[in-house]
Amino acid sequence: MKQTNKIIEVYGLWFADLICILAAFIAATYIRFGNFSDMGDKNIHFLVCICLMLFCTIYSFFIDWNRNFLKRSMAKETWAVLQYNVIMIMVVSFLMVVMQWAGVFSRLVLGYFFFLNLVFSLAIHMLVKKVLHTYYSSEHNTVKVMVVTQSNLMDETLDRLERELEIYYQVVALACMDYDMENRKFRGIPVVAGRRDLLEVATQMALDEVFLNLPGISRSSMEDIIHGFEDMGVDCHYSLELPGAEANRSRVGSFGSYTVITYTRFQSSYKRMMIKRVMDIAGGLAGMLITLLFFPFVAIAIKLDSRGPVLFSQVRIGRNGRRFKIYKFRSMYMDAEERKKELEARNEMQGLMFKLENDPRITRVGAFLRKTSIDELPQFYNVFKGDMSLVGTRPPTEDEFEQYNQYYRRRISMTPGLTGMWQVSGRSQVQNFDDVVKYDLMYIDNWSLRLDIRILFQTVGVVLFGKGAK
Picture (cartoon, rainbow, N blue to C red):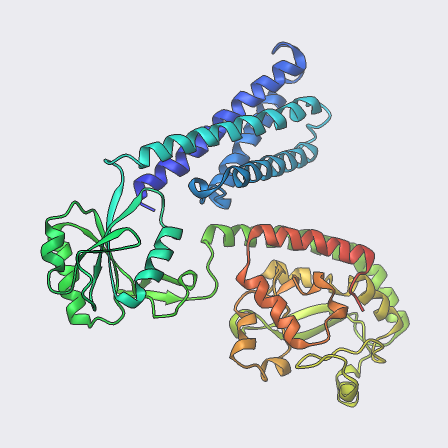
């Protein structure tokens, strides 16, 4: 996206959403009280309105919910606006309870505000979308692009560009560098040049930018083409992707003073990763407080049931092979590791993990702790430290990690979690280590803040009802 257009969309929509909140809040207050003098504590009303606008700002710039704004259909736009308003009401309602404003502020105002802001936001979004479509489709604002590629890549290149480019880009011409296709049309687009006359033809065209997808062309030939367009003052985009590489796994940046293309399976903005870390710190603090409340009772039960320490620690493998010490309430007898070798023949899990439903190494209290997931509480300290996250992949043991192949290793490319997709997908029913890996990789490939929140809510249900824990 061109920087000027991004500013128009991001800041324009943010400003429009703020206006909607202000208008909906004023209207909701008037509908409820019939005037602006009987609303009670005016300072509280003012602060609630500020909180709503502050949420809008954070949600717009950190969650970046409008990044696909122009490509969203009416149904998707309605769903996105509904989600935004529901989350906003939930967050602000929680703040009102924490700040003890709920007893003063009218709940009817908040209810009226929700429906009014939903209608206002959707209406203004559709209006802005219509205006931007009209603005970008004008001859003056359309970005005219020539695509320079090879005959075997032409169809794939056009498919991807039509699917991914913003609406203000228009492919006006093609150039084929390995086959004579001049004076023909491909998918309705004229092929205007070949290897010999590319720069000469482009010089006489109305052209803003050029996209080069030429993995079969030598570097010296490519330099001549790029310098030629540079001399014309035409922006030139050169694809560095390896043939067959997926577009969503690469990004261009710098390494030292070198310009590089980086291939990675995990792509996310630093803003969303920062929010994830803030959630981990807040969750870790809350979890440690809960652990402190449970600690005296759990410690007494463990000590009465079997000899040994209250806490169990073990070295686990964290993100990209980092070692860290994980902490749990002890649920096994002291000789558990030695006895594991005797029980390996009875392992119910295929692959690298060890799992035994009626494991004789587990104490009576330990069975209860595991069933209720109370044994996991000390891991909130690992979350707070940053060794783990609230949601992530399962952290492997050192023995397990030593047997990993390349496919298995990718599951530690993200910070391990206290809970994850495997845990909320019926972990007791999973009988194959490859299925655990499948869930972990599914989580990594589809990661989002929304997915983390959904898994956290599902985890609450799993813990409360003991689903999947054995």
